Image 1 (spheres, one colour):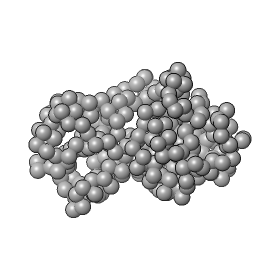
Image 2 (image 1 turned 60 degrees about the horizontal axis):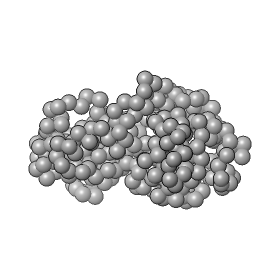
Image 3 (image 1 turned 180 degrees about the vertical axis):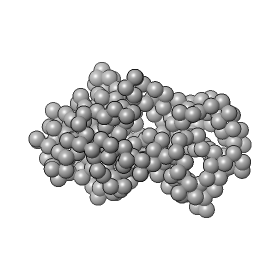
Length: 265
């Protein structure tokens, strides 16, 4: 049982991987979970570091699990990365992208196009087609002075088979090859949470963040002043969760347990 008043929570920010699903496998009855949230009158936004899918693709994936949301309810690291690039390069430009369709399409929509020549930045996220050639090209450009931007630092990604390498593993290879530390856009940076709170029209003290990763989901929530629930359905063990300082406000088996107690409380 959390040590705060459940009735004080008016908004939810939910992570996706390890909270809603493991790859293509849902964690619990997602349709029932979101129906319970809606009946409770609480607002919800999903905020993910995963840069492989666009907002539209995430909405399609949710529909396959029986969940209907609107585009404003999805905050992902490609959108946050595009906004950061616009601050650096207002006119847009050429970027070398290590990533999948969701990242490429989002950056293109903001006038940043993939190129191997004359690039202003290297943007790296999870890329299941990552190769030595991509590592080599990115290394040349970063060493030549291009901005080095990582969509998120997640070293692993939960799948039904176990933990797979995440974007952070790719960033580690690039950092080793270039001696340059990337600028990280996703959680634990609070910018994604600030954007989520803006869309929810909510304040941190009345918002509960639910995530499965201590060093990103929980750390970012705590820095901003949100309540934080750590679920054990993703990458974090119970012993690691209980050793984390400051402790999460709540440790639960999964999102179903959080929502059940939240809506009953």
